[in-house]
Image 1 (cartoon, rainbow, N blue to C red):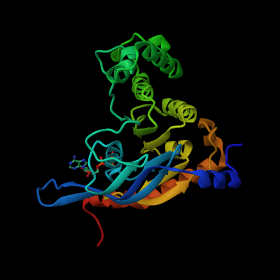
Image 2 (cartoon, rainbow, N blue to C red):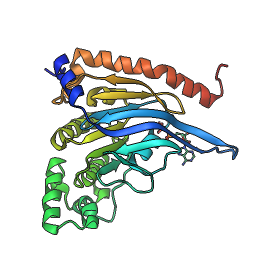
Image 3 (tube, rainbow, N blue to C red):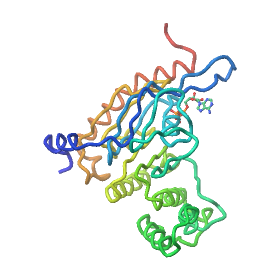
Image 4 (cartoon, rainbow, N blue to C red):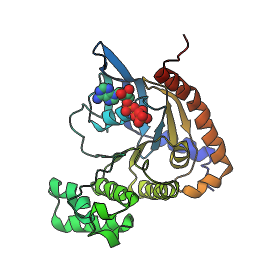
Length: 285
Ligand SMILES: Nc1ncnc2c1ncn2[C@@H]1O[C@H](COP(=O)(O)OP(=O)(O)OP(=O)(O)O)[C@@H](O)[C@H]1O
C-alpha cells in the first residue's frame, strides 16, 4: 500500500526536524528599464523538513529558479534569512552539505564519464582509493558502468544528466537541490529518472528540493508540493501528498494520483493566467 496511514503521518510530523528554514525571505533585481527594483521572490516563510522530498511548482517566471539559487547560496537574499542546518546561507558560497543539479547539461566535455563524476571529489582532496570506490558505486547505481570511459558527446541527454546527478551525489550532499533536471528528457525517460531519484532519496536519506514545471512529476515524487504565486513568487499552498516512502512511478495508476494532479493544476491555473496576462499586458485592474 502506498498511501501513508494517518497515524504514520502524525508520527512523521511529530518527529520532523527543520532542515531548511526561510524567514520573510525576499529577492529583487534592478528593473530592466533601469528605474527601481523588480521584486521577484517572497516574502517566503517556510520550513523544509529533514529527509523531506519537497517540490516547487509555479507559473513561468514566478521566481522558482531564483528561490533555488538563494537556497543554494548562489545569490544573496534582499531581505529575510535562509538557514540550512541552523546556519545562515548568505550567498556567495554554496554551503558544505548542499549539492545542486540544473536543467542545463553541466557535464564537462573534456572529461570521461568516470572523470566527470570524480571531479568534485578530486577538488575536495578525497583519498584516491575512496574516490574509486565512490565513483564505481555511483556508476553502477546510475546504470552508467558500461559508459565509464565514454565522453559526454557520446552519450544520450538522459545519460549526460545522470552523469551530472552522479557527480553531485558522490559528494554526499545532505540537501539536494534540483532545478528542472529532467526538462530536456522525453516522457518515458523522465518517469524512469523519477524512479531512480526516489531510490536515491530513500537510500541517502537526503532532503530533496525539486523545481519542476511538470505537475505529474511533482505529484508522483513529492512528500509535499509548494505551489507558488505569479511573480513575486510566494507559496500560496503547501500540499501534503500522503505517499509512503516506497513509492515509484507505478503510482500514476493509483486513484489518488489523478485527484492530486488535478488539485495541483487547479491551484496553479489561476496564477498561470495571471502570469500570462502580465506578460501580454492584459491585466484587469
Ligand atoms: N540576475 C537577474 N537580473 C535581473 N532579473 C532577473 C535575474 N534573474 C532572474 N530575473 C528575473 O526574475 C524573474 C524570475 O526568474 P526565475 O528564473 O527565477 O523564474 P522561474 O519561475 O524559474 O522561471 P521559469 O519557470 O520560466 O524557468 C524573471 O522575471 C527574471 O527575468
